[in-house]
Length: 327
Image (cartoon, rainbow, N blue to C red):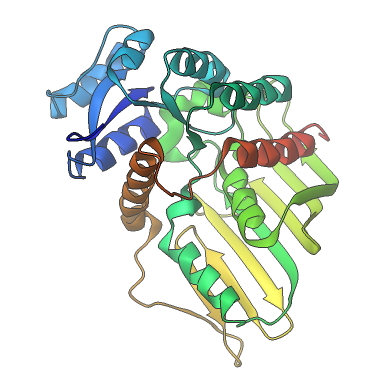
């Protein structure tokens, strides 16, 4: 690969596909460049090419593998395994959205397929490149909270899917592939696994509407290493589109991640304080995705990176699916 950037192919050009497209275009093409894009929906192609006519769309999904060094899979979960099989079969590295697949059997097959191939593979858990998470790690290393004693995770949504996801309502609002536990809580479980240790689910509950709709509320008790973890989430519990807290309390104090991108410490007078210049998640997200794409290029080149592994994603998915099957 000497003398040129990593060639990135993308399958699925909805919300996340477009975000990775924009992140890639913002980086030096000597690092990484767009090689081929495919989406089954002509409206997605038209929407993007109206603004960026130079985008290298191809006619069929397998054509992406013919042009790229690594394939980013941003299609609905039911298609992940099939696209990964094509990519790995062509000798290409894989970067995929979570969950790995729609069933635990298929997700285990995904991991085994990656292991057999010997090719680089990773999963797009964005906290791997979050500046706010870097602050949490630094505070933990400095002993700010003493010995961790309890982790609490809460997520709330005014509606599900969130307003900006309505184009994907057909699967995001359904029990088989969608729901906020897979889409949002999985990110916080990945963060928990990275900072606190292996996940082990204790008790859990999930509430569903009639028909095949996705969950409206969940609760769970688990451990991360030896640390107790309390988790809850629900739809209609806030007037915000998306509100979340990841709060770690220890013998000397507490730290938290609020609304994706605000790292805060609990002060002696009981107030939460963070960087007053910290950007909102809407502002931070493009920078986070630039970090993810930069690490993706490193992965393909065989250089060190800390993107989420397929094994980590499988561990997170195992907990998620066990929570959902309690409903």
